[in-house]
Every structure is written in C-alpha cells, then in structure tokens.
Image (cartoon, rainbow, N blue to C red; front, side, top):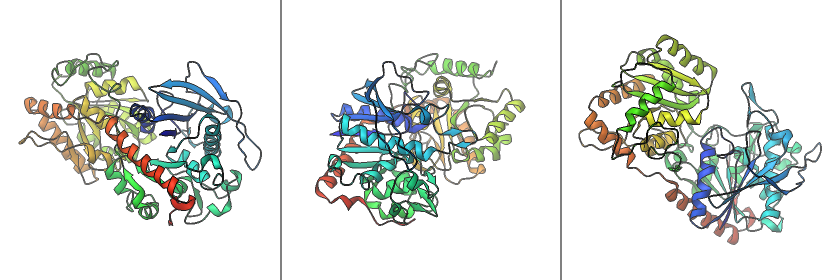
Length: 495
C-alpha cells in the first residue's frame, strides 16, 4: 500500500519533540513491511539536504489576498522512504519552526495551510497515495480539504486519511476570519466541524473529517476522551470512539542503545554493565560536577521545561530533594520560570544539581547512558520516548502513571524481582518525593538494582509491532474509502 506521511517535523531534518522521532522512524518500519512510503515535510532553515532536487517547480495555493507558489524538493531516500520538502522561504526560512520565545508566529495558520495544500497538489504529480497519514494540528487541514474543497477531485476518490494526535494540548486555534483567508468555506464554522468556542480549531477539523484517529498510547487514547485530558474536544472523540485507537510509539534502537551509542564514552550491555560506571563519570564531567562520589545515584532529566512535564511538582519539592543523597542532571529549555529554578538550584547546590538550558542531542544520549535513574513526573504524557530509551540503557525510570508512561513502565517489586521502574499516581509534590525516595532506597541494594536494570534492558519497544498495528488501521481505512460514500468519515460531533 502507498502511504504518504505529512508532518511539520521529522528527524534528521527538523525537530522540536517526539513527533519528529516518530516521523523519522515509523515510515522506515512500514517500508520494511513492504509498504511504499513517502514523507512530506516543510523545508526549514535548519533542514540540511545533501543533494536537493526540485521535482515540482511551482504549486498554486490560493489565499484570499493573493496566490502563493511553493515548490517541492526531493531530499533523497532513506531506509526505503522517499522524503519530499515543501519550499516557501518567506514561511519556512526562519530561526525556529513554530515561533519565538514571545509566542507562536502570527501567520502559523497560513504557513501550515500552504503546506497542506502543497502536499495534496504535489501528490497528484508525484503519486497519489492510498492513505494520507497526518500528524497534529499543523497537517489537520489535509483531511478537511480532502472532504471539502477536493471532495469531487477524481484523483483522491479512493484516498483515505489517518490522523495521529501526538498532544491534545496543541490544537491550532485561530480567529474566524482565518477561514476566508485560507479560501475555506464558511460552513466549516459550525459546532460539528471546526468551530470551537468562537474560534477556528484545526485539530477539531481533522477529528471530524479523518477516517481513523490514532494516538500514541492506549492509555492516552482513553484519557483524551475525558474532561481532564480532552482539552475541550473530549465530546468529539467520544462521538468518534469507534474509530479512535492508541498505538504505542516505538523507538529506533539503531539510535538509542548502549551497545552502539556513538555519544556514549563507553559501550555496555545487559551482559556486561561495567561500562555504565564510566559513562556516569563522563556525564558528570559534561555537567561540570567534579570529584563526585561514584556511589551517589544520578537522576537524569531530558525534557521541555513546562508544567505539563511535571516541573511544577519539582518546584514544590526542589529544596527538600536537594538534601537527598543523589545528584540531578537536567537538560532542556522552555518556560523561563523553570529554567531559572534549575539555575538557582545549581547555584545553591553546585555539587548536587546541574543544568544545561539547551536542546543538545549528544548530551541527551550521555544522560541516558550515564544516569542511574530517569525522571518523568508528567501531568500528562501521550506516549513519552525517553522512559523507553532509559529502559534500554538500564537507566531506571521514575514516572507518573499517565498515558504512555503508565503503559510502558511496570512497578518494581523487590520481593519478586519483577518490574522495570517506579510510578506514582496522585499529581502532587509529596507523591513525587516519596517515589524518588523509594527509588533511592532501592538503589542501595546493588544486587537487586541490577536485576531491575536488566528487566528494563530486556524489553523490546522497537517499531516493528507498532508498524504492523498501523498496517491494520490502513487496511480498515482502505476498506472504508473503497466501499463507503464520501461523507462516511464525517461524524456528528460537538465541542
């Protein structure tokens, strides 16, 4: 089957978060199963292409004020997957993908509407897929366009759509006048389509018009149908419940494995864990912590610094946590308050808490390889990848039981020797602190701890199983599109 991915980011070309990892890995796993797969991405300033070739010189995209004419560049084939890039410098040749520290770019609606239209038009030249697999609000207009503006286009008569939600917290909300600017019909501005409390909601449009909706873990697919996690769209999803499913993200073990990691100082495996001690020393050196007691456990953090990731809980307990017998190394950037919190703690406890305010892939790998534990106390977490990476490195996760964190981490039981990490349920600082203390206590018994490490290292979260699950969804969608009328995918939904 021919599957075309459309996404706003994908490794190794562009990245701000886990979406990029998925778009870099899942297509290759699908190609390995025999599918024909193409990927469409914007060509950003940070996108590095070794030998780009323009394959569509000009695509016409109408806007209310004037036409725009992006081109499409072929970026080569990786792992059997063809990568195409929509090129329009005034929209994508910017310092960042989505915005500046002051906020989102004000023209994001136009930027990603142009991208979505360009993908559809380019596919008519480069090959119309049987399935468009779209990701997050930036590509939400593709299923909307296919069932409205392009509904009578014979090129897409049998083309289906799968839409994956990576984070319900980001929906693409814009003022009503966005619809005529993008040349979209006003009848989309209704409760059953794209209207959302007086605004246009791109994500809601995709949920209404896609043939099938997936998200990135089974638990999260259930959570987003509740008031607590649905961000106002839980009613839409409950109405589409029969076509909503969760498929756990996989990971690329060619990239994330202590046996092959090019950024780790020393390689190691579950059969020989000795190299991890050297990686620990290398990690502490990278963070400027000298003469540390090698027996102290190191807790690693790699994250966007935001309340969603549980940093408000860390703020509640930070001073008490710093008194524990351990070292914390944190890598990330985001909310200024949390950046400053870690910098303050580093000044207060320079031998105990270190931070690098940055996105740094090499340091992220060093944390996975050298830390003893990995902390992810998220308020909500659609899937999470770092806790899965951590398992492979024998870096024991400490997580909150939500979304993919709950699906992937089994609580440690020292009596039975079963489990892979530590979990807490109540979202408060006290629960987090108690769970960290439980992990620190368990670390003191190194014989038992190595059993725990090896339990995690034996887990297999590669993309193969998840890719097969997506293949089943594509088969269902193909059946829907070839047997059902065009309006079959549009469910009656409410905000």
